[in-house]
Amino acid sequence: MSKSDIQKQIEIEKGLDDLSFYLDGLFKVPGTGWRFGLDSLIGLVPNVGDTLTMFPSFYILLAGGRYGVPKITLLRMAFNIGLDYVVGMIPFLGDAFDFVWKANRQNMDLIRSRAAGHGKGTTSDYAFVFGLMAGLVLLLLGSVLVSVYIISALLDWALSLLF
Image (cartoon, rainbow, N blue to C red; front, side):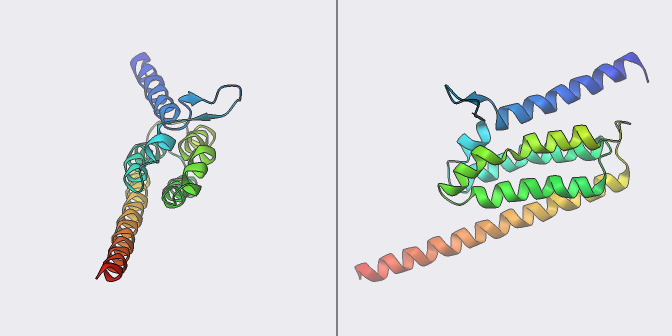
């Protein structure tokens, strides 16, 4: 491995750490050790915020495949993202959950502890990761459809009260 390859790996790892930090630990609550990031702030916008922050989380999941993380760990990483998304959609409770759960930080810790160290994922790893992402996108689409249905039902109910 050449010196430029080593520098590239270090740069990639730093970029992943930076992304995780921005999403889960950018801000500190004064007088405490508690940290939160853009995931918690953007997640305050119902449905839209959680959907937007899911995509940078996909990049971290893809990096897990790139670093040769075992498939069972990739599945755990996808679970972290999915749980963060589903619970994050619940008003107030989801925002509090985002403040504590920190799926991206957990996934970075999993990459660090489980990476094969060779810096390359196999075709099978990538296929598995893309399959996991497809499942998460289906979860996202399903939640949007449920939200549309609930909003439609609430509008029908409100309109029936008025007329």
